[in-house]
Length: 151
Image 1 (cartoon, rainbow, N blue to C red):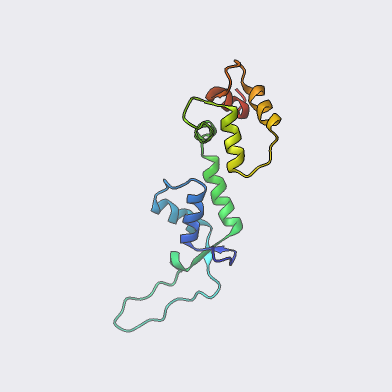
Image 2: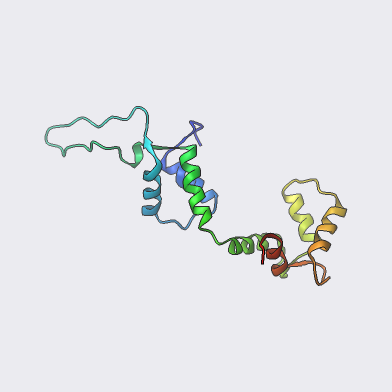
């Protein structure tokens, strides 16, 4: 977020949430972050102050930074643990405007507009017709999942 090409713990947590991982516990996030992070470049232990507890000689979470590659490695592990069928069903809900149980030409047209894509009307109709096996005027959940997964 601050464009230094390194993630602190807060940025790490935010980035994972943006990928849909908002259900991870804080201890799990800290463990994952610590597993791949390194001390920031200027880190050094705090000086000892008489009468105070001895400062840590190892960096704490706030002193660690995560590289792009470190983040990609952690995110890839979380993504690999996802159930593709469940993810597709979540996506289906985003397309199925009005929860009809199918994606219609109107639904697909709406999504295309929301994404600011330029898809010709005949292609939108063609996409629905290609996967509407039963000819009911839309793509069902089962057909949608079947488009992306080998059965």
